[in-house]
Length: 262
Image 1 (cartoon, rainbow, N blue to C red):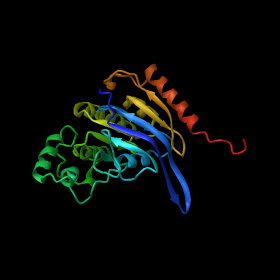
Image 2 (cartoon, one colour):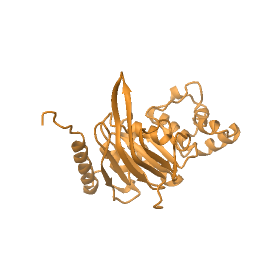
Image 3 (cartoon, rainbow, N blue to C red):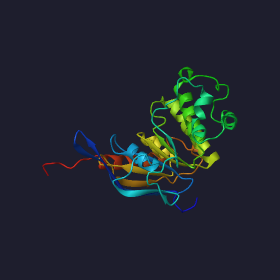
Image 4 (cartoon, rainbow, N blue to C red):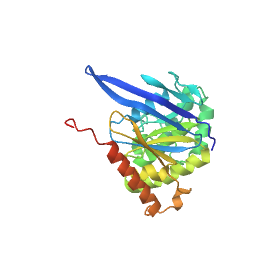
């Protein structure tokens, strides 16, 4: 992988107003991601992880600091990365095929060309034969596959995935984790992936960014020095479990709030 970062977040902070009260979501967050890297982000609820994604997409500007994509400031520009939010947000009145081509449509790609490309990828995404199905007929795992295909079809090199497997059962989640790693390798994407699951954070990643409780700060960057493909790694391996313990300790340390009486 190239050492030139494709994403850089430099001393980014963000504060929101809630009923006139200032709520700081992020405080002085800095990190860089190399092209082709898979980075997971973990931290307690409310630690600013989704806010960070909004900064990277350009939907929300930081109060201080800056975000760069490909060495250029985002500065309010949108459409530079592909984003999959926590909910699949499939449109119930559109078929699977017409849902997954939304990104290319918005980019001005002719529908015929967008549908042809989507049909080519349907088998890889486990959706062959479901082109004309509607979202309410799909299982949770199938809906997530459709949402991921829609994100891949944006054609962006950088993908932001916000807890895509959080609502799935354990077996479906494990299946989709392995499948996602295969798609990541095949398409050579750069992925930032938010999760609340320690095992998932370690299993998928090259590195894990650990966020503290609000205001979110990066308290640890854990390098996952395990061989790929990860499908060959036992979930009970000592190396994997050792990294999970290290991650849990970092989360617990970052989740402690100062004692107001101390």
